[in-house]
Amino acid sequence: MKLLTITIPCYNSQEYMSHAIESALVGGEEIELIIVDDGSKDDTLKIAKEYEEKYPSIVRVIHKENGGHGSAVNTGIANATGLYFKVLDSDDWLDATSLQKIVKFLQEVVMDSVSLDMLISNYVYEKPSIHKRKVIKYTSAIPSGRFFTWNDAKHFKMSQNLLMHSIIYRTKILRDCHLHLPEHTFYVDNLYAYTPLPLIKKMYYLDLDFYRYYIGREDQSVNETIMTNRIDQQIKVTKLVIDSHNLSNIRNRKLRDYMIKYLAMLMIVSSALLVNSGLPENLEKRDELWAYLKNRNKSVYRIITHRKLGYPLQFKKKFGQKIIIWGYHFYNRVYGFN
Image 1: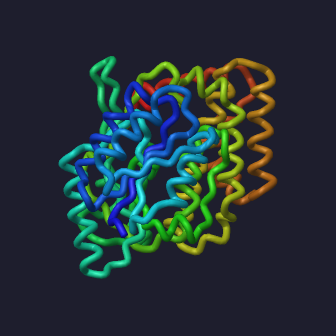
Image 2: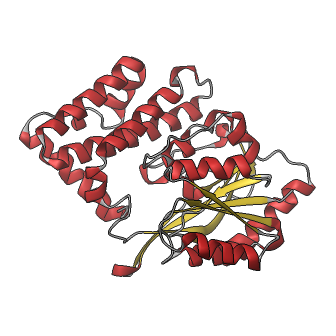
């Protein structure tokens, strides 16, 4: 059994996957690196096989029919032998020094028989085309350098959501919550970062700039134009998040507040993209999405509407819609998330 499984979902990734793979190999023999070729049409599988031949005790390659990013993550979870699990997208990379520190820490956790459910670290938006980077840290939201629970959490800013980039799960947690991401759907990383949360009891935060999240490819799923064109998938994921838990039944207040805030973020992004498109049919989709939330959970709808900027996002007049668009682009300029 390995200490940490790192899964790299790959689809037509021949141009950049080696950078991701090489960054993960720094973890050495404690790492199980599962490269999932999701039905690529280029040399992705060939490159992956070359790494498997060179590092047979570390690298495993799984070839499958195309099912999308979520399907590849599902495959990684199903085949993982590591005690802990991490997803690394094929166009991103891991910081070498941080990975070595994380491996050492997890070794100590296992030796001390500590039941750690989630390890959190920083991630970095990397935009080399404009020589810009933005580090997302959690020092103001959660304790650093000690084990903690949700009761110890403080206020998470909107920029401090725990994303796929910042979390390492105990593999058993992912299996116990029966996480199964939908196929042929983008933005499922939100489900990955959200669905297991009620099972997370003990956490630890290492203040390390570990995950490097590349921003800049024209075909990237977080490109604003592509996100708008795929807005139906964004809506689908948001609805799946709404349906994944009855937040009124979450007993821990701080966990419940965090999950509501995360859902509010998804509602904000979806609404802003729908309004920004300027299409009448997308304004109808925005109204339908808010009605969906209201029908599923009126109390959460009221909280998001009155406390989390939900009310302005439902403006129907032109001036109100301009405010939404301005707010979306301002937030993007500050944090550079696409």
